Image 1 (cartoon, rainbow over the protein chains, first blue to last red):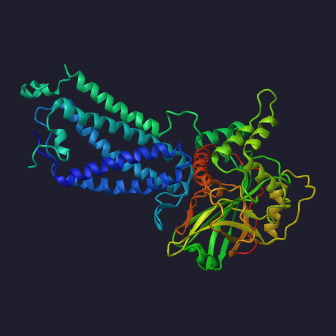
Image 2: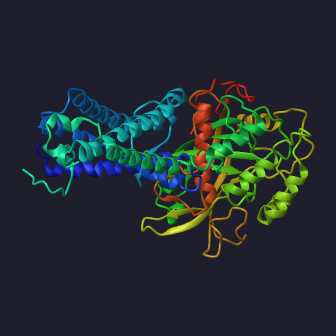
Length: 179
Length: 366
């Protein structure tokens, strides 16, 4: 049985999970809603930047601290899938807010976070760049949703099929004792 | 499944004989996908959305690549705004502090045809971006109308669809148009107000109204409903017979700016508690307090080109701190719909604008 992740790491995981799921829901609904568009966009921008900050913190923790090892008997293809999907998740969680920030920059929009707080443009004003980045943002969001589904399905499989303690290593309030 | 725990650890990772938990996981994932599909409107195809409104514009006007789906025929301008500080009574936005701030913007005709012929009754628009040293932008979209003819995006879209050509005749069906106004008395009344006023002869002597209400927020966070107007300094001149020039409104504007800078007063009309903020079809009473906040000066006109007003989305909800959206349902709908039009045209091959008369010499530098 693997040991658990440190509590702070687990809290960060579940906080970010809630934020990312909310972000995907906000993103997919705002582009189809006339009445809620403005309110949703006003949450989407600062929440995306907050996720960018948190994923940078997560990456530093991941690099500089030791993760609990995967179970010894876990087959090689599942180990590969686990590691690959995690690094894809990290990549997408960096790419989505950065592409969002870049596309707003290229469109010449002010990048307002809250009230007078705003970010500088990270690209010059260019409708051609915007035309590339705007669909890329959507494509990456669908990719993130697909990877989330795989991650969620795998978590449930660890919990209900493999029963190998991997789910519990990231869970909060499971019966296993923290070590 | 209890024997799973006691069997060899390697067998944990086999799916054989684990149909029930597998099915459960499948159902869980399916529910997540269904939830997001619902949130994205995929379960209600045909619901009124920003995409549908832009599609309707394209159905009516055809697709003119690179051009706005509405207000397609236009020209860019630059100039400045001299703020006199009066606006700071209502709003903490930096634009209302005394000073001179750069502006750019766009004059256009309402409608989705980039090669439309100018007529005395053409509805004119003026969009302006105000930039302040703190890095904020304020974008306004204004029309030379006293009120907007539609209360909400539903009415706007319903009326838009009545202007689609009837497949049988190739022309819009007047009976459908009449039925719309019979069923939407607020729109009929607004059209009456619009038709009761004379048209001005040009862009420069027209006054423009923001029509939607906004909230001015002061430094104590007190919100005051306002509507803004750009009031022409040039004397009003009623339209007579137009000259024989399909671009005469734009050509006259260009000549006027070459002669001398053109000015408008930026006026805030202060709403009282009984004034509707969520209905742009209703004018506010004429006796409402009007605050003159300064002068907008336009000193150069240039054709649409890469990087200028052509590639800017004059989203009415690009607002500085100190101005907020009201409860007017048109505002969020405009913001959403302009974004779709902007994204579509950004990726399209650009055709030259009808207004291609070279850059005018700035009449006087700021």
